[in-house]
Length: 300
Image 1: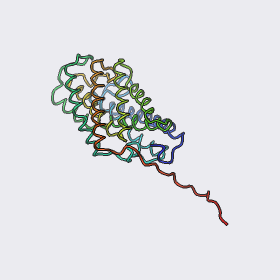
Image 2: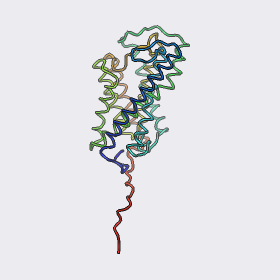
Image 3: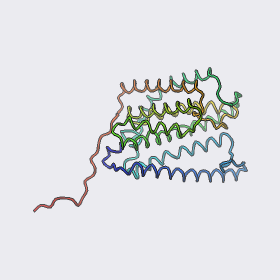
Image 4: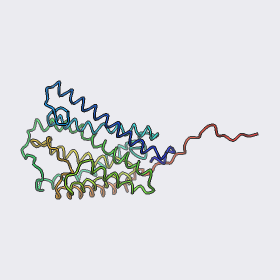
């Protein structure tokens, strides 16, 4: 995508990545200060990292907000220094294709239901309680998660399948080679838990990267990420102490990791089947760089 705008320079992707990382670090410091100030005002105890303990739901909400702030930063980095329309990080059309997003959502329902059903029969791999928190607490948590989880998941997609995929792709001939680095970094960003958990995340990153290339945008990846995270956070919210757990998908035991990989591949197959029939635009239209003044050949 970076090459098709006519503004590609070798230094733009690395410079944008560094500025994006620095801006995100500053945002995290601001949010930490806000959390501390809010906790002080509410009389909340202090966490080991210096933030305030706002309770399981409050802490989870702050974590989700912290990740979600990366989304506008990616859009700003695309505008400058990448010097191209912010929408070009979303899809080849320069916008979020709502219709195609809806089709991907339909494709995501069968794998989600399958993963949910199988998960109930898998052996537990964590120390979380099996006690239900109660409907009032559960519904309150779901209301918060329904708002924040899609933003958090979309932000991660804009970082890994949007910015990083395009940044690496600017230096390699084949777009498929750009899929591997972002998938490994995506898995590493969740921490090192179990080998199977890391492998499951890497496969998830590969699947979402490949779908981004094959469909020409982030819609399919966003849907898969949002559905997976809503399921994971929803289950945690239903259990006593679930939202207090620091476990991530990286800590998944092998039965759950294998099941998740299988449902990811099923989702990919359904999306690619739909793509052959709906034919979403996959390639962007190359643009000629603007003409520069001051270099005209004089005539006499």
